[in-house]
Amino acid sequence: MDYSKERKQFSKPIAGYQLTQAKLADMVTRITEAQLLVYRLGRLKDEGNMTFQQVSMAKRNNCELARDVASISRGMLGANGVTEDYPIMRHMANIESVYTYEGTHEMHTLILGQDVTGLAAYDS
Ligand SMILES: Cc1cc2nc3c(=O)[nH]c(=O)nc-3n(C[C@H](O)[C@H](O)[C@H](O)COP(=O)(O)OP(=O)(O)OC[C@H]3O[C@@H](n4cnc5c(N)ncnc54)[C@H](O)[C@@H]3O)c2cc1C
Image 1: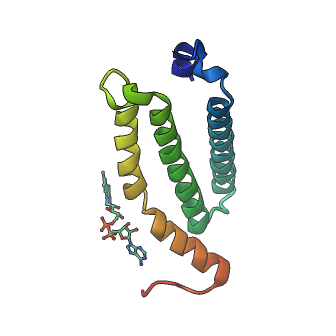
Image 2: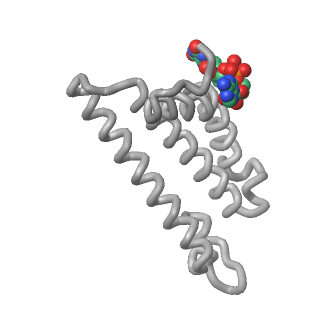
């Protein structure tokens, strides 16, 4: 967001364009959703009612969100987003490893699919 306020194109900051604001609006909304999800998960854990399927839901959603936000942010930096002058590629590389080591998106999807349907889509 700081960069989009500093960077001027066509004589005004790119943050002043509707397409940039749509990206920022999506990001802040999805980050807020993700925070609410883990807030609810923490409450369930404190109450002793958290299930591993709910953990899968949070990991699946929040890792994907972080990955998407990092990617959109990289794009918003334009060519500067692929240089070492800004740390966004480091964040992208970090989230790529988290996207795997927190359990892959596919496996969390299968866990949720089984929880919703009662049918396992994988061989045990
Ligand atoms: C930086 C890092 C740190 C790690 N730290 C730990 C740790 O501390 N402790 C630990 O136990 N593990 C750790 N891991 C391992 C991590 O949990 C595994 O890499 C991860 O679970 C994926 O397993 P895999 O690499 O064997 O991939 P695979 O299981 O071979 O999966 C490869 C791809 O196939 C997909 N896939 C697999 N099965 C299916 C299916 N049935 N349907 C559709 N798609 C499928 C996967 O989603 C993935 O995209 C770490 C990994 C990394 C990268």
